[in-house]
Amino acid sequence: MASTPSDTLNHPAGVSDTDNMGQKWEQYKQDQLHQAQRTINHAQELKAHAKHRIAARKETVAAAGVADDDNSQDASNARYHALNRMLDEVAFYPAHDQRKESPAYAKVHHQMTVIDDKRCLVCGVKHSTLNDPAQNPFGAIAMETHHHTIEWALANAIDADKFNQHILPGLRRTASQRPAGLATVYTEFDTAYANPMTLDQIKQWVDHGADNLWVLCDVHHRHKFVGIHAITYPIWGPQDVVEQGLIDQEITQAKSAGKNSDV
Image 1 (cartoon, helix red, strand yellow):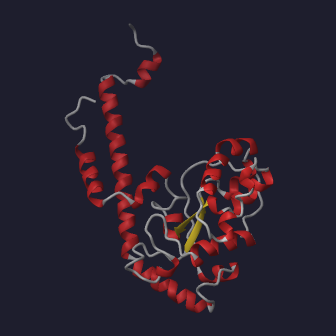
Image 2 (cartoon, helix red, strand yellow):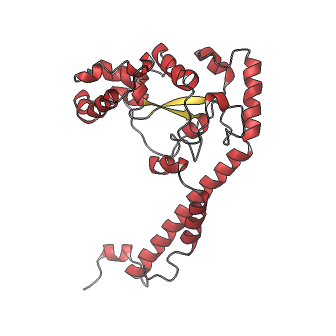
Image 3 (cartoon, helix red, strand yellow):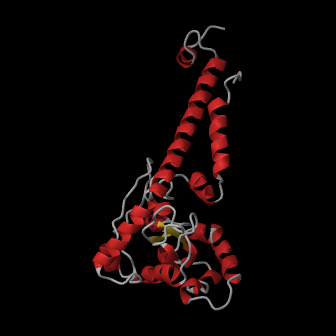
């Protein structure tokens, strides 16, 4: 059969299907290896600078002249300098107001990060251990709360019927299993879970519902290569459980895989 123009474009003269697939596979492996190595290098760099970042945080807190447990927005602005990172992607958001910390959000954030002293889901550092390099290996300078089910900027895009169908059943199960004696910020929406939630209730839940918030350190929240806002979730999720020996083994395998393969 004669080659069509598309055949000629997809398979240049002298390059077979097998050769073409082999080249693509090799390029894919090299890309994955490069990304893995950059992630490891960045983690090592963060650990190397941990003591410096912790010392800088102490100096900033002292210079700000506010108590370390002051949860006000002014104190946070005076105390910390945020490093903004961006994932290379195209994201479409509905129109929304400029993000401002609501009093309700400030309350639940303070309860989770300071009063309850919850740990970062990835590295385990807590508000009470930020100044301890042994318990703060990545040099985090702040504990933050991440809107993990629905981010704040997407609140105006939510369909109430879909929310009540897909998310509400899980929230009801969570509420039914809560231990007694929790602070009220954790149970604020439990009554609302009993019936289909209105769009206004959903927007309030997105902003400050404890069930929509994860405690993370600033590093694993926003920093390049390791932050949940900077890398894809399948890469971010297992960071707390993958052991270094396996990572090293996978890198070695990636370098040699396919060298003697027909693929």
